Length: 274
Image (cartoon, rainbow, N blue to C red; front, side, top):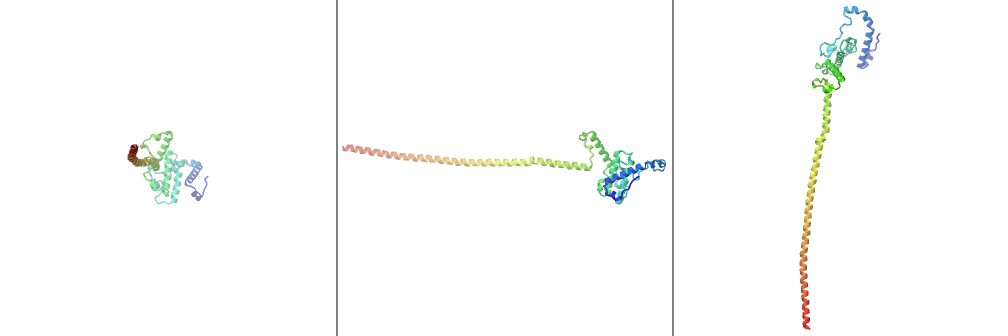
């Protein structure tokens, strides 16, 4: 026997929790109706209402249906009609539902993913371009599960796959590009000091060393010239002193000679007087 919850309380619940609650209600109602369905199975086979009955809202047969085709609603449907039809599709196509047990698990999950994406588009949560004809949700889901299975059983397969086997979605490619760009910028920032700053610093140091060497040479040249001039002046003074000393010595010698001559004359005159 089922139970009833007010619609206001159901609308206040999150979408995923609301979906799970409806699935639980469906499973409980289906288990309670097994006895009544078994009694009417014979008549149902003839009237077309047995287990082989087609879904009221079957999933489209072509591989790339639009959101309106999945929901069996015309364009411009009201939000309430979209929400009600979403619950009906969840009851019929949820992976745990008894209506689609005959389908492979990958296809069940792919259908439910497509229904959820179509619901997001119809209620305006996701732009319509995200659910375009270029996306194949069946193929994406099957390839995603295949990749997960291969990665689990062969962890090294990621390194041996060729580029043609890459099946990442647009979001994953965008993330990879962002990571690649950030890595390149980080590498450039790490190599920039070694490529530009360090050569500039070395060049500045070389220029400073050359300038200091030229200044030292100029100072040494000036000091050498001053030292040479000083030595020349000292040598000239010594030479001039020697010349002056020679002239003074000659004059003294002459004076001494005259004195000697005068003394001899006086002695000679004295001897004559005696």
